Image: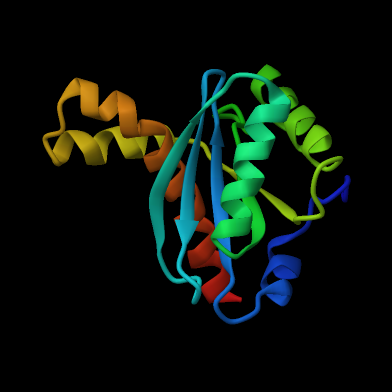
Length: 157
């Protein structure tokens, strides 16, 4: 299924050029967590959190970052239910991607994000971060877990 800019992981790999990076997104209702890969597509790092305001402003900030960082594609977490079914959050994510397609030609890979926030929270607890620090960084950390999953899959191809 291809809708707008949505592509497969294989197509994403084919588009990579040396030094170009991927930007991972964890879409929340109040924030968008961002993570970025290195140019070799080996490691994902938590990068930034966008405080959601208006769609047009959020997208402008996102695309400005993508341009500055040499991004060739976006990886967006798809919040499937634990049984694999799609709920309201998946519909909201797909609507975001559809609306985003009107503003950019960057390809989008939707990636199953089940348990990414749980894993990010666990890692931050193990790092002994305070509740306040965890709240500030959770979305970008979840985005890095989503993006790292894609990077590992790309290495297997």
